[in-house]
Amino acid sequence: MSPSGIASTIALSGFSEVADRFDLCLCDVWGVVHNGVAAYRESIVALMRMRERGMSVVLVTNAPRPSDVIVGQLDNFGVPREAWDAIVTSGDVCRSLIRARAGESMFRLGPDRDLPLTAGLDVRETGPDDAAYVLCTGLFDDENDTAATYADLLAGFAARKLPLICANPDLVVERGGRIIPCAGSVALAYEEIGGQVIYAGKPHLPIYEAALAAAEEKRGAPIARDRICAVGDAIRTDIAGAEGFGAAGVMVLAGIHAQDLMEASWEERHGWFGRQTHRPAYAMPHLVW
Image (tube, rainbow, N blue to C red):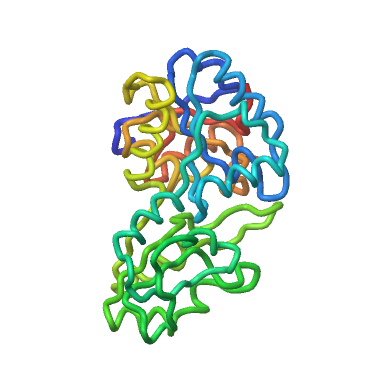
């Protein structure tokens, strides 16, 4: 049984089976709406059907970039803006954490594609030896590096007790069928050697609170927690975060846990859920209506 008391996961063939139970869907992006290469058309249809039924849809992603960057990315994937009401990213939350450290020297650990995260902010980038804190948005080369690549660098930060802001708590993500390490894997390695980590995204509450606020602003009315579901493909972030926020977790099986779940029977899937730290209220192979 999970910490929230969920004893069994309900298997769904389509979200329409439970749509009347919810007013808000907090939907993960990478792994649910697209795989980093192409959008999932049936997922987009499902989100649009939710909105047609009167539900609000807020896309909640651990992408370490501001939400307007994600809007452009989704446009490029052909995801219609009618599929969502608002987007909240860990990048949005992270920017508020950086603003609180305005003017401090910062070492940025991550690829240059994440530079929009700090655009317009009062940051002073330095080398690792001169930094007052670390901003980790990912790995410099996520096709070849792992967290172990940075063992010496992290040990130096830990020795100086530098806080590390993790802009993307995901450990891994699927990119076109491959599993790629994310900033969360570096943050976990840092914690394991005693480093202090400040997380910006799921499963931590600030990103959920920001998403709920965005939805309530759009609806012009409050939304009860028991009328909220959170769809995602990762136990550690999406399902744990939903549970911590008081929302019903809806697990998409064909994401980062696909190797364990997609070829398994439902009996085997239920056994797998029972061995995890958190259990979804519902599960389905893909997000479909």
